[in-house]
Length: 266
Image (cartoon, rainbow, N blue to C red):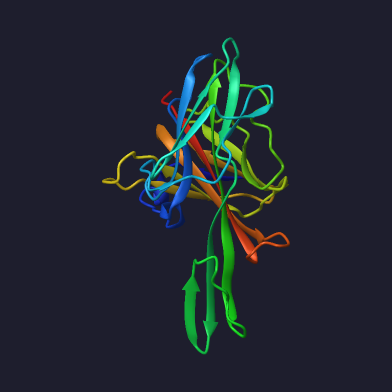
Protein backbone atom coordinates (compact mmCIF):
# COMPACT_ATOMS: atom_id res chain seq x y z
CA UNK A 1 0.00 0.00 0.00
CA UNK A 2 1.33 3.42 -0.95
CA UNK A 3 1.04 6.13 1.67
CA UNK A 4 0.82 9.82 0.87
CA UNK A 5 0.69 12.62 3.46
CA UNK A 6 -2.29 14.91 2.98
CA UNK A 7 -0.84 18.36 2.20
CA UNK A 8 2.67 17.73 3.44
CA UNK A 9 6.16 17.76 1.91
CA UNK A 10 6.45 18.18 -1.83
CA UNK A 11 2.67 18.08 -2.29
CA UNK A 12 2.00 21.11 -0.12
CA UNK A 13 1.77 23.44 -3.11
CA UNK A 14 0.74 20.97 -5.82
CA UNK A 15 -2.22 21.74 -8.01
CA UNK A 16 -3.52 18.96 -10.25
CA UNK A 17 -4.77 19.97 -13.67
CA UNK A 18 -7.33 17.21 -14.00
CA UNK A 19 -8.92 18.02 -10.66
CA UNK A 20 -9.57 21.58 -11.83
CA UNK A 21 -11.20 20.66 -15.15
CA UNK A 22 -14.95 20.62 -14.52
CA UNK A 23 -15.06 17.77 -12.05
CA UNK A 24 -18.40 16.45 -10.73
CA UNK A 25 -19.19 16.65 -7.04
CA UNK A 26 -21.97 15.84 -4.58
CA UNK A 27 -21.78 17.85 -1.35
CA UNK A 28 -24.13 17.25 1.62
CA UNK A 29 -25.36 19.93 4.01
CA UNK A 30 -24.15 17.75 6.89
CA UNK A 31 -22.11 14.59 7.29
CA UNK A 32 -23.67 13.83 10.69
CA UNK A 33 -27.45 14.30 10.56
CA UNK A 34 -29.89 13.08 13.19
CA UNK A 35 -32.53 10.44 12.56
CA UNK A 36 -35.49 12.06 10.85
CA UNK A 37 -33.49 15.02 9.53
CA UNK A 38 -33.74 16.21 5.95
CA UNK A 39 -30.35 16.17 4.21
CA UNK A 40 -29.80 18.74 1.45
CA UNK A 41 -27.22 18.10 -1.27
CA UNK A 42 -25.67 20.15 -4.06
CA UNK A 43 -24.45 18.51 -7.28
CA UNK A 44 -22.58 20.25 -10.08
CA UNK A 45 -19.46 20.33 -12.22
CA UNK A 46 -16.80 22.75 -11.04
CA UNK A 47 -13.19 23.82 -11.26
CA UNK A 48 -13.10 24.95 -7.63
CA UNK A 49 -14.94 22.98 -4.94
CA UNK A 50 -17.65 23.72 -4.16
CA UNK A 51 -18.31 26.60 -6.56
CA UNK A 52 -20.90 25.27 -9.06
CA UNK A 53 -20.50 26.01 -12.76
CA UNK A 54 -22.57 23.41 -14.64
CA UNK A 55 -25.61 21.51 -13.39
CA UNK A 56 -25.37 17.75 -12.86
CA UNK A 57 -28.35 16.56 -14.90
CA UNK A 58 -29.53 13.54 -16.90
CA UNK A 59 -29.07 11.07 -14.07
CA UNK A 60 -31.03 9.37 -11.28
CA UNK A 61 -30.04 10.47 -7.77
CA UNK A 62 -30.22 7.66 -5.21
CA UNK A 63 -29.53 6.80 -1.58
CA UNK A 64 -28.48 3.46 -0.11
CA UNK A 65 -29.44 3.03 3.53
CA UNK A 66 -27.75 1.08 6.34
CA UNK A 67 -29.90 -1.91 5.33
CA UNK A 68 -28.34 -1.92 1.85
CA UNK A 69 -31.58 -0.98 0.08
CA UNK A 70 -31.45 1.66 -2.67
CA UNK A 71 -34.11 4.30 -3.26
CA UNK A 72 -34.62 7.49 -5.24
CA UNK A 73 -34.22 10.79 -3.39
CA UNK A 74 -37.34 12.60 -2.21
CA UNK A 75 -36.76 15.66 -4.40
CA UNK A 76 -34.26 16.84 -7.03
CA UNK A 77 -34.45 20.33 -8.53
CA UNK A 78 -32.31 21.23 -11.55
CA UNK A 79 -31.17 24.86 -11.53
CA UNK A 80 -28.94 26.68 -14.04
CA UNK A 81 -25.54 25.78 -12.56
CA UNK A 82 -26.34 23.11 -9.97
CA UNK A 83 -28.79 20.46 -8.92
CA UNK A 84 -30.30 20.69 -5.42
CA UNK A 85 -31.58 17.51 -3.79
CA UNK A 86 -33.32 16.76 -0.51
CA UNK A 87 -33.98 13.52 1.31
CA UNK A 88 -35.57 12.94 4.70
CA UNK A 89 -33.99 10.15 6.72
CA UNK A 90 -36.22 7.69 8.58
CA UNK A 91 -36.90 8.36 12.24
CA UNK A 92 -35.26 6.02 14.72
CA UNK A 93 -32.80 4.55 12.18
CA UNK A 94 -29.01 4.81 12.71
CA UNK A 95 -26.02 3.98 10.56
CA UNK A 96 -24.45 5.17 7.31
CA UNK A 97 -26.19 6.35 4.15
CA UNK A 98 -24.61 6.49 0.69
CA UNK A 99 -25.84 9.33 -1.52
CA UNK A 100 -25.13 9.15 -5.26
CA UNK A 101 -25.77 11.20 -8.37
CA UNK A 102 -26.01 8.01 -10.39
CA UNK A 103 -23.95 7.62 -13.57
CA UNK A 104 -24.25 10.39 -16.16
CA UNK A 105 -23.22 10.13 -19.79
CA UNK A 106 -21.92 13.51 -20.85
CA UNK A 107 -19.99 15.25 -23.58
CA UNK A 108 -18.37 13.51 -26.53
CA UNK A 109 -14.76 14.36 -27.36
CA UNK A 110 -13.39 13.66 -30.82
CA UNK A 111 -9.98 14.64 -32.19
CA UNK A 112 -8.55 13.55 -35.53
CA UNK A 113 -5.84 14.41 -38.03
CA UNK A 114 -6.39 14.65 -41.77
CA UNK A 115 -3.93 15.93 -44.38
CA UNK A 116 -1.59 17.16 -41.65
CA UNK A 117 -4.30 19.21 -39.95
CA UNK A 118 -5.70 18.36 -36.52
CA UNK A 119 -9.33 19.05 -35.73
CA UNK A 120 -11.59 18.51 -32.69
CA UNK A 121 -15.34 18.46 -32.14
CA UNK A 122 -17.79 17.94 -29.27
CA UNK A 123 -20.80 17.96 -31.59
CA UNK A 124 -22.60 14.58 -31.28
CA UNK A 125 -23.63 14.87 -34.93
CA UNK A 126 -20.05 15.38 -36.14
CA UNK A 127 -18.42 12.43 -37.89
CA UNK A 128 -14.74 11.65 -38.10
CA UNK A 129 -13.87 11.93 -41.82
CA UNK A 130 -12.97 8.79 -43.74
CA UNK A 131 -9.23 8.26 -43.88
CA UNK A 132 -8.55 10.48 -40.86
CA UNK A 133 -6.18 9.39 -38.10
CA UNK A 134 -8.20 9.11 -34.89
CA UNK A 135 -6.39 10.69 -31.94
CA UNK A 136 -9.24 10.43 -29.43
CA UNK A 137 -12.89 9.37 -29.55
CA UNK A 138 -14.50 9.12 -26.12
CA UNK A 139 -17.47 10.17 -23.98
CA UNK A 140 -17.51 11.16 -20.32
CA UNK A 141 -19.27 8.90 -17.81
CA UNK A 142 -19.37 10.54 -14.40
CA UNK A 143 -20.51 9.57 -10.91
CA UNK A 144 -20.29 11.54 -7.65
CA UNK A 145 -20.99 10.18 -4.16
CA UNK A 146 -20.83 11.00 -0.47
CA UNK A 147 -21.64 9.31 2.85
CA UNK A 148 -23.47 10.62 5.91
CA UNK A 149 -23.93 8.85 9.23
CA UNK A 150 -26.66 8.94 11.86
CA UNK A 151 -25.20 7.91 15.21
CA UNK A 152 -22.53 5.21 15.03
CA UNK A 153 -20.99 4.45 11.61
CA UNK A 154 -22.06 1.12 10.17
CA UNK A 155 -24.35 -0.82 7.88
CA UNK A 156 -24.26 -2.06 4.30
CA UNK A 157 -24.04 1.26 2.44
CA UNK A 158 -20.24 1.05 2.17
CA UNK A 159 -20.29 -2.29 0.36
CA UNK A 160 -18.80 -2.21 -3.15
CA UNK A 161 -21.29 -2.15 -6.01
CA UNK A 162 -18.99 -4.18 -8.24
CA UNK A 163 -20.05 -2.12 -11.25
CA UNK A 164 -18.19 0.70 -12.95
CA UNK A 165 -15.48 2.72 -11.28
CA UNK A 166 -15.70 3.27 -7.53
CA UNK A 167 -13.62 4.15 -4.50
CA UNK A 168 -14.34 1.56 -1.81
CA UNK A 169 -13.45 2.87 1.68
CA UNK A 170 -11.63 0.65 4.14
CA UNK A 171 -11.51 3.38 6.77
CA UNK A 172 -15.03 4.69 7.36
CA UNK A 173 -15.32 8.04 5.50
CA UNK A 174 -17.43 9.53 8.33
CA UNK A 175 -14.85 8.64 10.97
CA UNK A 176 -11.74 10.48 9.74
CA UNK A 177 -9.52 12.55 12.03
CA UNK A 178 -6.31 14.52 11.67
CA UNK A 179 -3.29 12.34 12.45
CA UNK A 180 -4.95 9.17 11.15
CA UNK A 181 -5.12 7.66 7.64
CA UNK A 182 -7.84 7.20 5.07
CA UNK A 183 -7.49 3.75 3.48
CA UNK A 184 -9.43 2.74 0.37
CA UNK A 185 -9.42 0.57 -2.75
CA UNK A 186 -10.14 1.70 -6.30
CA UNK A 187 -12.06 -0.81 -8.40
CA UNK A 188 -13.60 -1.12 -11.84
CA UNK A 189 -16.39 -3.69 -12.27
CA UNK A 190 -15.26 -5.23 -8.98
CA UNK A 191 -11.61 -5.68 -10.00
CA UNK A 192 -8.84 -3.64 -8.31
CA UNK A 193 -7.09 -0.97 -10.39
CA UNK A 194 -3.31 -0.99 -9.90
CA UNK A 195 -1.25 2.20 -10.31
CA UNK A 196 -4.48 4.19 -10.40
CA UNK A 197 -4.08 7.90 -9.73
CA UNK A 198 -6.33 9.46 -7.09
CA UNK A 199 -6.31 13.22 -6.51
CA UNK A 200 -7.59 14.62 -3.22
CA UNK A 201 -8.55 18.27 -3.40
CA UNK A 202 -9.34 20.73 -0.63
CA UNK A 203 -12.80 22.29 -0.71
CA UNK A 204 -12.23 26.02 -0.27
CA UNK A 205 -15.85 27.08 -0.97
CA UNK A 206 -14.66 30.18 -2.84
CA UNK A 207 -13.04 30.96 -6.18
CA UNK A 208 -10.54 33.48 -4.75
CA UNK A 209 -8.23 30.93 -3.09
CA UNK A 210 -6.33 28.06 -4.67
CA UNK A 211 -7.10 24.66 -3.15
CA UNK A 212 -4.33 22.31 -2.12
CA UNK A 213 -4.11 18.92 -3.84
CA UNK A 214 -2.31 15.66 -3.15
CA UNK A 215 -1.93 12.74 -5.57
CA UNK A 216 -1.55 9.10 -4.58
CA UNK A 217 -1.21 5.92 -6.66
CA UNK A 218 -2.81 2.60 -5.76
CA UNK A 219 -0.65 -0.49 -5.28
CA UNK A 220 -0.94 -3.82 -7.12
CA UNK A 221 -4.10 -4.67 -5.15
CA UNK A 222 -5.73 -1.33 -5.95
CA UNK A 223 -5.18 -0.06 -2.40
CA UNK A 224 -4.02 3.37 -1.29
CA UNK A 225 -3.64 5.21 2.00
CA UNK A 226 -3.56 8.93 2.68
CA UNK A 227 -2.27 10.42 5.93
CA UNK A 228 -4.69 13.08 7.16
CA UNK A 229 -2.86 16.16 8.33
CA UNK A 230 -5.46 18.88 7.90
CA UNK A 231 -9.10 19.22 8.90
CA UNK A 232 -11.77 20.20 6.40
CA UNK A 233 -13.88 18.89 3.55
CA UNK A 234 -12.15 17.16 0.63
CA UNK A 235 -12.96 15.60 -2.71
CA UNK A 236 -11.23 12.46 -4.00
CA UNK A 237 -11.17 12.07 -7.79
CA UNK A 238 -10.14 9.16 -9.97
CA UNK A 239 -10.50 8.66 -13.74
CA UNK A 240 -10.22 5.52 -15.87
CA UNK A 241 -10.58 4.95 -19.62
CA UNK A 242 -12.44 1.82 -20.78
CA UNK A 243 -13.69 0.44 -24.06
CA UNK A 244 -17.22 1.64 -24.78
CA UNK A 245 -19.93 -1.02 -25.07
CA UNK A 246 -21.22 -2.20 -28.43
CA UNK A 247 -23.51 0.35 -30.03
CA UNK A 248 -21.97 3.35 -28.26
CA UNK A 249 -21.24 6.39 -30.45
CA UNK A 250 -17.60 6.45 -29.28
CA UNK A 251 -14.67 4.06 -28.92
CA UNK A 252 -14.07 4.71 -25.22
CA UNK A 253 -15.65 5.96 -22.02
CA UNK A 254 -13.76 8.32 -19.74
CA UNK A 255 -15.01 7.16 -16.34
CA UNK A 256 -14.81 9.70 -13.49
CA UNK A 257 -15.66 9.07 -9.84
CA UNK A 258 -15.58 11.52 -6.95
CA UNK A 259 -16.14 11.07 -3.24
CA UNK A 260 -16.74 14.01 -0.91
CA UNK A 261 -15.62 13.44 2.69
CA UNK A 262 -14.75 15.37 5.84
CA UNK A 263 -11.72 15.29 8.16
CA UNK A 264 -12.16 16.43 11.78
CA UNK A 265 -9.70 17.69 14.37
CA UNK A 266 -8.83 15.20 17.09
